[in-house]
Amino acid sequence: MNTKIRISAVSYTNTKPFLYGIEHSEIINKIDLSLDMPSDCAQKLIDNQVDIGLIPVAAILSLPKWEIVSDYCIGATGAVNSVFIFSNCEIKDIKTLQLDPQSRSSNNLARVLLKNYWKADYQMVTEAPDYTTSTDPNTAFVQIGDRTFGKKEKHTYVYDLAEEWQKFTGLPFVFAAWVANKPVPANFMQEFNKALKLGLDSRAELLKTLPQRADFDLEDYLMHKLDFDLTEDKKKALHLFHDYIKAL
Ligand SMILES: C=C(O[C@@H]1C=C(C(=O)O)C=C[C@H]1O)C(=O)O
Image 1 (tube, rainbow, N blue to C red):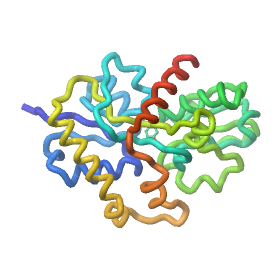
Image 2: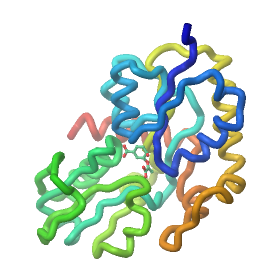
Image 3: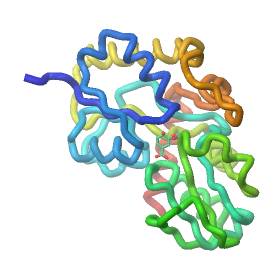
């Protein structure tokens, strides 16, 4: 009988500290781990294909039952450097926003900020054939994760969404949290969280194993831009974000 806890985690660099901790702990033998793009982490938890997911917090609103089971998350206090709107014009002048199909949180964050902070009047496109290339002068697109590395210098108008959220609300932001769709034994969660902490504490070791890139500062990203503690302020931000999404 397979009694392993099924877990879906994000397949991006931002999750590598957590994976390092899991792979260097006994817990690896007690779980079935899959790595997925964030939208699939969410869908697997919604469809009950997994018990725990590192899911975009926006997708929590699609779960009938949920519980945040970890004190760690994927968040940022100020700029995160991997969640952007890249635009062909000033953000308040956009007419079209193309969404990132791999995202749930950042697509919604872009919509929340465009409505409440930038007060822009625009159309949203979810299935643009190639959402990252448009020569239209009033089109912008959302992009998240490793695919944004090195792109900041390639676009004229660049908005870091965690930084813009902080300007708007004064709060940090949480993009993804470890969420369960059913009760999970407390001793398992304790052990899992210990593994996550080990990974965060081992980031210097992890960095030695990652290929360096000339166009992106991985060390700054993993040590400073990403902020993995699910603090009270981040929980406050999460609830506020949910309220804004419901009002869209
Ligand atoms: C900081 C990031 O956070 C993420 C953004 C997510 C989203 O927009 O739905 C989900 C998970 C995280 O990977 C990133 O991917 O760059």
